[in-house]
Image (cartoon, rainbow, N blue to C red):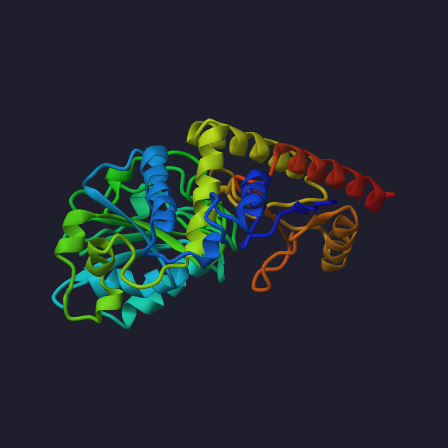
Length: 363
């Protein structure tokens, strides 16, 4: 079997061990005579997997009993609407901090639900190249919540220190850097993350939400969109994406086996040093448009001198079994995503390729 180096932005690389476990259990799960895909979500076989996945989220992130851990459908994009539907009452406003394309989409959905305001934006000429300074945040102390996007997949920026919001709940879309390191869950009212970057396959979103926010959530919305509905039913109100939950369990188990989130952070910082080192080591050829202290450790973006060279770079990388590096169509350039399952070896191979490509281009 010849596996490629997968640098896709999402759906993204999954740990080989998690995939091999799924392969080995696919036809006959735990001696039950059928696949986990075929099991009822009400049966004890699936419920054991479901409960283990929740327990692993709690263990890895030290999630207290003051929070629900939910497995929902609709991806992060559905959460753009569910957050204000549940947490934004008619008489209040919510603050949004804009740092990229996904936070813009967040804002647009919230506008359809209630009153919102932009507390800060780092957009300059349609581009986002940095995370705002604390002094740039104009937060409303009476806001229903403050929303941020922790990592910006398109533009390659990332929050490393989250804003202080006082008594106002901080809500965060962590889809593209969830589980890259440990963070203090208690600083947040609600965290949500599409699994398809660091936590599992597409088709499922993990939500960690404070119980008091769930209880005070709006009741004048359809039941299926209420966090309380899913919390009261342990994410089993309707049929969940059972195979996706199963694969999330496999990935979380792998993270634990690797040494937990401390080990993930060390590996991710090591990969960042290698890749950004390759970019900064050839400033006449590679250029990262992101302010250094805002550079993402999940999505590394850079440009070459010409678009023709970028196309050649992508083509030759693919021949060398490195895939998924073409920048998003809205911004162009190169994007190398280095999520948890992307090995240091893969990043070192990319850095060596970059060095060789530079030498050949320069003649």
